[in-house]
Image (cartoon, rainbow, N blue to C red):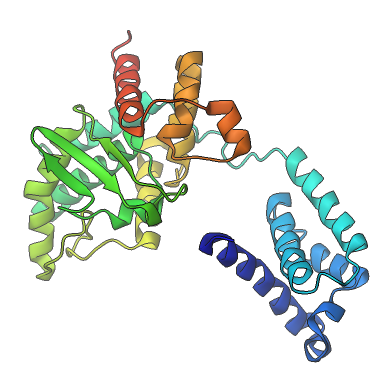
Amino acid sequence: MTEQTLGMIMRGYGKWLSWLSKVHPELLSVHPADRLDLETFVSFIESNAHLSPHTQHFYADTTLRLLSRCFPDREWGQVKRAVLLLQGRAKAYVSHRKDGRILSGAHVLGEAMELETSAHQSTGSDQQRALRQRNGTIIAFLALIPIRRRALTSLRLGESVVIDGDDLLIVMRPDLTKTKSHWETLVPTSIAPLLVRYIQLTRPALMIQGGHDHNYLWVTNRGAPISDTSMGTLIRNQTRKLFGVPISPHLFRDIAATTMARASPEAVGNIRSLLDHRGHETAEKYYNHATALEIGRNHAQLIDSIRQGD
């Protein structure tokens, strides 16, 4: 069991314990396996009815997984059937959360680059212009390199942002990737100038404001490293201004995959490598021998051709 899986199970089981402490505190004094009878479990499931079917299944499944592993000699048949019912509902559920937010990757990139360019022509203070340049660069970066939020905020100059001759590389260590493997890609030539401007001019100007000295790539208006939470808020606020709807960092991954799939059936096979996915269903659907470095380049070229109307 991986550390990530263990963390997920602990989070789900924590939800169960929290619910018990509020609704049935007397059960906390009995054996853990005796707390989970069918009636109590159904009440727990119903308490999460306001959540999505996927989340309901997650909390129920992780609780059962932990208890059934710890106490395999107990009879869990009825509880397992309840979890299987939730799993079926989750698979059949169609979420509308992303409606109107999966935009064309070319459109997203174009608006981001226009924002970055306007920073040099706009009025306002030096800091305001610097923040516009930074925000435009972040959105453009995600449009072509849709890495996860934690990986995005963990990028460091000289470590994960590397200059190799004329190339600018993004290199992620295994603990920042879902597949727990080394991952790297070239920064596409269409956005490399934006990133270089940010690194050489914008970032130092912002860091002077707070007197900071570190190598994190993305910084706040006072030069401190941007946290995961702050990065999510920044991106949602900026995309709301640009597109009229907030787009979370994770949705950039959907945008990239959808753009590739719509533009070319042959490109679908590249999605798995671009997004650093693995798993039986994903592997069977998207298996491709190309490296992530080549896939990143192909995705960038595809976006550029769409923007130019090829």
